[in-house]
Figure 1: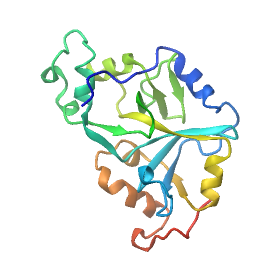
Figure 2: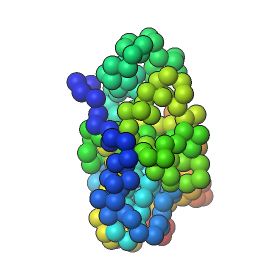
Figure 3: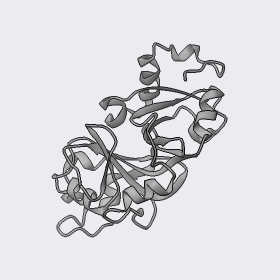
Length: 217
């Protein structure tokens, strides 16, 4: 367990952060799930599902949604924030005590992101991904969740996956990734071990028959 609170972006800087990753142009796979193929060639992404938060000809950014961070729970993060009245885990809603924090990707693993339903949305700090899904990375959303006034559906991740211009397209061409439509269970469900197989079955793919030779553009 780290001895510091993960860095979250201040107020309106989420959009600026996305823009600095080179993702301001027209969208491609935004709101889709990438499914890592056996031949992905990078153990950090083995059996990963990645929700695409932004994708354009300039690059891409997403969050792994099926890999818990080792020994890390939402309660551990919140109790380090010194929120008045929520100084101990026992003061949190019971459902948050064992809510896992996920490994969002290998880039900037001290940076926290909350993927959530659009019933919570900050005009200055949230990034709309779909009509029903947004991304926020501020302390304010963590406090709202801890007080029971946050989004109805959410997951928190540390770090993200990022690609420079053309890199993701090249990996897809080399059969590194499949992609499918996201749904609430794949994004916000807590049964992490079964998400990978369930995503494949959405495409009609038998997980036992997977090889590194299949592709889905």
